[in-house]
Structure formats: C-alpha cells, structure tokens
Length: 122
Image (tube, rainbow, N blue to C red):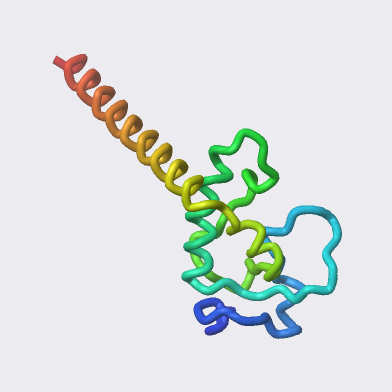
C-alpha cells in the first residue's frame, strides 16, 4: 500500500510502524524514537552521502543500502539521519570524484572489451 507520506515525509501511521524500519540504524538498541518515512529529497541526500562510506576503509555505514525510491517499508530515526548525513563537503567531493573515475574506467574497459570481441570475430 503506497501512501502520500512516502513522497512528503512524516511519521508513519501506528498500523504501519511495525513494518517500517530505520534503515540507517546502527546498533541493537532501538530506543523510543519514532520512525519517519523518507521524502524523495532526503533519500537522494542519503544516496549521495553513502558514497563517502563506500570509500571509507572502516565504516559501519558501508553496508547500508539506500532504496531506489521512497516507500512505506524504509524509514529513519531523526538522530540516525543526522549521523548518517554528517559528512564534510570535502569528503563528499572526494568520494564523487573517486566514483566518477571508477565509472570512467569501467566505460573505457567495457569499450576495449567490445573492440577486442569485434576484432576476434574477423
């Protein structure tokens, strides 16, 4: 069941709270903080910041997978969101540059593989 909350953000109704989990939560204690549903913008912000954790050698957040779209199954605690998104602009810029470099290498490598396959066929 899709509600408007997934696109606008806000707290999940009590009936849906059992299904909605904080995807950014690290640790076992759950506390009493309410789980809120992501807005599209907040989800995009998390996706961008997750690049930083991807390139950190040791990070508890490296294993977190950010969903492709806002829905009623993935939410966040406000404190978890603040911790997850608290990366410096310098770290974010470096991570974006590393990812761009990897993407470029991947494209170049794929292109050379295609050229090699085509030359093998002749």
